[in-house]
Length: 221
Image (cartoon, rainbow, N blue to C red; front, top):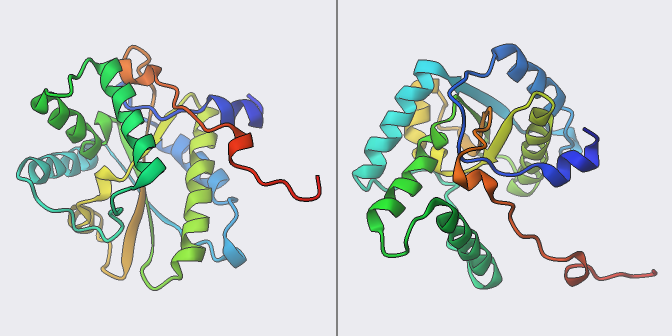
């Protein structure tokens, strides 16, 4: 698979097989990923890689907190989107719910679907990316975004699929307790990773992208 094919064919996967991902493969993926660019080579990232019983404990704790209606504690929780960005979010949800057969008025099914995100879509592995709280967020986010994409593309070489999602790290106190993450660091991004279950309906989704001509201002061309 060449680079262009990897970028174009990569998609967010929300249903996984139970097969564990070997540590040596995850190690190779991260060794490639740390070559991602970062502002002034600050390399702001650190990783937690969780699987097996450890991830199951975090998964169940997240489930309990979500079902209790606990308010997320992670300061990276995004503000509500507005305008076209909100509309794109809504359109994605409509497409996913249609594939999953979830009716708009079915609150129980919608709750279960949201819970899947807090459970890392029941994947065998989760990669959490952390950064120092005192870093400049502009520099920080450029590097974190670059390494997220690099991890997702590198995973394809091993037949693995990914989904960058924030629900699983919203209750950061759970990760701090199990992984010993100090208060001086923030949990910035979570990447669910595993072998895709192509029979899972939501995995058939190919999200829509805006045409380039509607996004670009050309100068000197």
